[in-house]
Image (cartoon, rainbow, N blue to C red; front, side, top):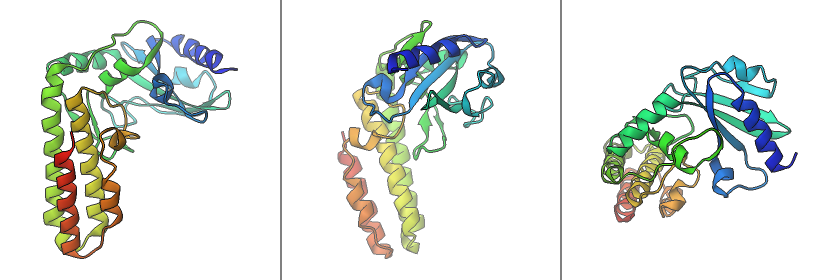
Length: 249
């Protein structure tokens, strides 16, 4: 199948599952930044419950998780599959949860959640960002703009987390010569700062893959790459990172 036939085929099968109201294509393929080898990221928007066993019954090769298996929060599970020889992800999206987070984001409210493979975790408005950026293949979904209230509230939260991350590294890791822990703290604080920068611009974020580049924070690579285990050197690196983050806009 060519790409158009493939996405139509997958969307039709997903749309036929019980409880599914909409199907989207997200990620790099929706945004036009993909390469020929990029994964295909689909999402099923359901209401009133979704049974992963119905997805398994289609018979595609791969792993299908239970609801809540990917953290139990807004990013509540999905599947890693191979369809027609292509790496294909399917994400579960509870419409009641998504609509709640959209209403919260419009009032400038959100919360933070940990998520595997994400250094800084994710904001609950990630599912709102997906609505804004994804391509709807079946059904009808809102396409929200970045709320003005969120542009006011989100940067302060993210910069506060970054400051605490650096502060802990300075007091808890640097004096003990803990190079790896300091490196991790710098990477985490960089991602947190990048979230702050992009939120202040009113730019949606759905993952961390291009986060630092978009925020103009790739200079942190040089700071991390030059780390040495001596306490004074680690403290200097933390100071350098802090200056870089403070200047980021």
